[in-house]
Image (tube, rainbow, N blue to C red; front, side, top):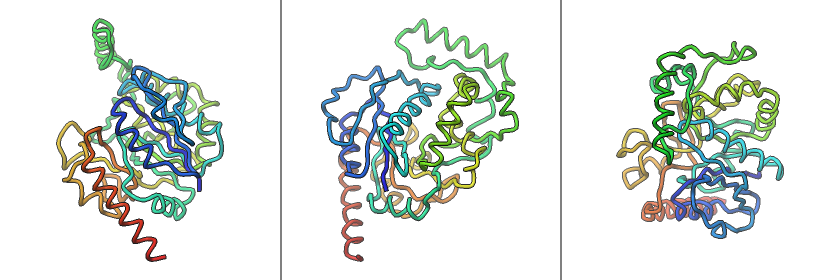
Length: 304
């Protein structure tokens, strides 16, 4: 089984090196999108099966640029070859199960698409996110004047444009939202890329929604012939037991959770193979995770 890892990165490049090293396998390929504003020595990642994609975007939190970066990663991987699964990761992620465990889970659920999704509105994902016109870039931009102007425009739109709906061909679509991270099967990826190529008005609409990375793929998948294939996300994130800013940085208080084979989430039971988030200073918890996964490797080999 071949995997394409799609990584979104913008900082913490020492940890990104750890992540890439942990994922290297002869059967898999790694594709990395590095934010255009980041200073990165690409030679640090010059390894077999690792590519930093040439088309780099300025990615703004809460904006459609996050989706555009994911689409560029998907296109790059799809053009290179055939993969059984495409797994989206953050540069702040790290595997908490062995590759053998991941592959076994994917084989046992072959054809499934792993994504947390539930029908909107949700307590933390109101319909306002999709119905209000939004311009990205107001939170993080070098120009204070531009940032102020975008924020002013968004305040005006929030007060005046409140009832946007999906374009006419998609009015009967149910609205879904959930976590950003996913693992999609080859068949759905082909459906998705064809959908995006044929339905530019759908993409154009989402360019002016708020935090579309928590809605865009969810709505397409859950209104597609593949809606019945959904399973829980493979990535563990902590929104409750650690310290802010959330999701919490993974630390020793998460050890018991990371050791579990299955975890209960707001979206149901999930088999987590990755966790986020870590940073350059996460050496101690990374070493503990490596010891944990190595012991699983030995245990699996012994049972064989």
